[in-house]
Image (tube, rainbow, N blue to C red; front, side, top):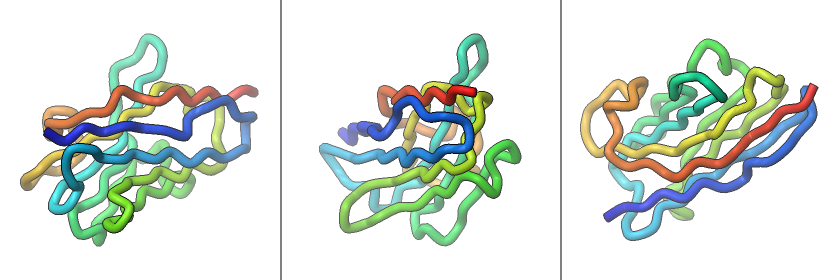
Length: 124
């Protein structure tokens, strides 16, 4: 049973950067589609970014395109989300997710495995 654990959240001022990391335990990310989602207070969980099993295909939500970068390290068994130029609208709990199979990666229903989430707060 693959378990996902996120880290790297925190409080940052607008314009700043954070790097989130997701590490798998009890298994490996190899062959898994991986994604990041977020849920802001009072809102539904929304797609942020996804990366294909090979790492060759990256897809981003329009709201983060050009500011966020998703990457994966097969050796370290981690998936990271580099977040730059943060603004208060990026405040949310960020979740890492994993799926084994052929999915678009943009929908929560695509994923079987979820982390507990890490809080990101951006102050103005």
